Length: 208
Image 1 (cartoon, one colour):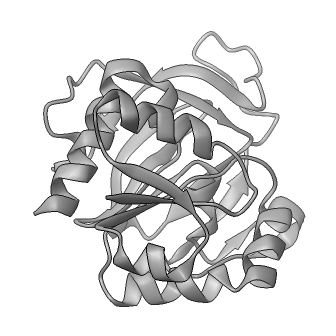
Image 2: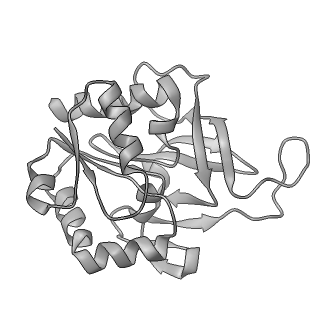
């Protein structure tokens, strides 16, 4: 069974519905025992980095997440959950979990799209990806697939951890990590068949 971390920051129910559509057993929980007992953990989130970190710290879930990663528990960060895994966010100059080297930066309003027009901030809607290195997470997903994004900040991790990039005014990291410890900037639970396949790939890894 997968555990979906419940820390009052977002899209847990949407993730649960997406997993249920694939007959993947899952539970929304903030209980440390259930998180450690799960075959894998999904760390979702929408909203602001500072508020999310306050919730994690107040409930002790920051320590739980750190220990889960230390023990090698499979983990998938999604959107805000992806950003918080890094060391710092420019959003309210927030110190984040520091489980991945790098930070999170705000899109510059001066950036232009391919037509030369100012980009929209937040970056919202469907966009493609460019795979930079092989990953189990993207197995069976077409190269021309698109995913659904909603974010005003983007991750800038250690280059060795970049799995895929996406372009919105600049080329930014949209998937990062290593086998068993992944994070994506987009919302797989809102990304149709490609997103569902990515969630199933994560679950299949957890079962192995």
